[in-house]
Amino acid sequence: MPEAGSIALVSYLPEPLNTNLQNFREVLPSSYSALPHVTILPPRPLRVELETVVGYIAETIAPYPEFLVELTELLSFPATNVLYLAVDTGSDALKQLHSALNTGELSCQEAHEFTPHVTVAGPFESTALPGMLEQADALWSTTDSARSFPVRELVLLWTGTGGLRWEALRTFTLRGTRRELLATAANQT
Image (tube, rainbow, N blue to C red):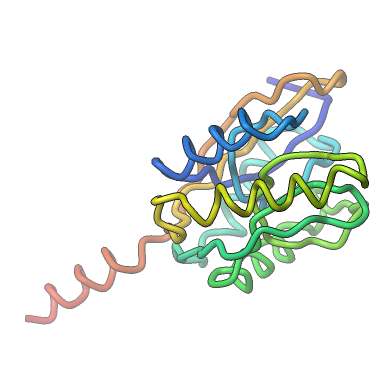
């Protein structure tokens, strides 16, 4: 079990959206290579035993049901010149999860304000950014992928002190709203 390094909590995108965004990265010259995901907890140091982290995450997310995320427009972060897809529907739920989890031993003063998003590519030089944004926007506007998807699973990632490769350690499942409602309705008949 890891005793040092950094952890993060993410939700990966479903297919075919995942593949389409990876294909965008082949067209856009970018150093960003992580699998497309929505971040719940950005990277932070692992300060306690992993079992403690796993228990804390499981307990904290227990009351949260799965929810829908909708990706909208392509934007860029001014501080980093990274291109991202904004989250419309589901943004409040992601912020609530982040706030609930960014406490206690998982608390971390992050470099940037938490903004629900999916990173597309970057960072880019300031002079190249407008062209890259235009190119990425053209790719996004012609994709046939659904722009919304349910967030059901959260994946705890870990990287060693070098931070070169992230490893999935544990998957957590959010409470299934629809299934629970159907089961409750069936028991009442």
